Length: 109
Ligand SMILES: [Zn+2]
Ligand SMILES: [Zn+2]
Image (cartoon, rainbow, N blue to C red; front, side):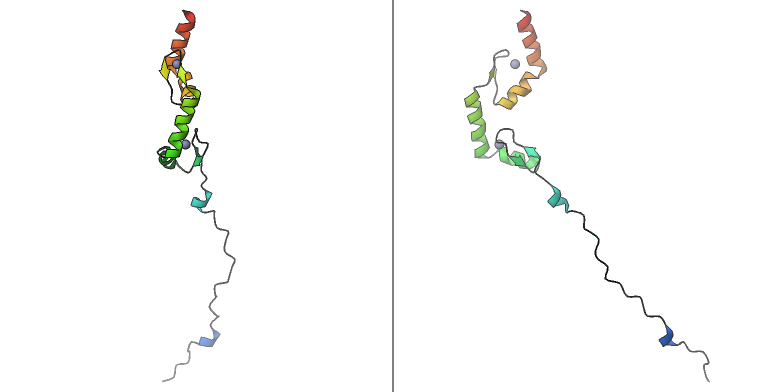
């Protein structure tokens, strides 16, 4: 028994081969994109994250720096009669409600 129609393999089109296309530009790696953005106000160093800053704050270098600054500035709010540990605290304190209130009262008196 003859099969009149046989599939002719050789007429089949060649399978399209994957072309070697240039890879699309990779997006920058998220880790590489990260920049240290959390500054230590005392040492002027930049930490990657708040966690890193905390680690830094526990370091001796940082503590020495803070102690040095506090001693150097001998920061104390005369209005509230409180000792402030650093210049940064002074700024925060001076902007605080309690301080402003006391300042007002002192001036009014
Ligand atoms: Zn520091
Ligand atoms: Zn004050």
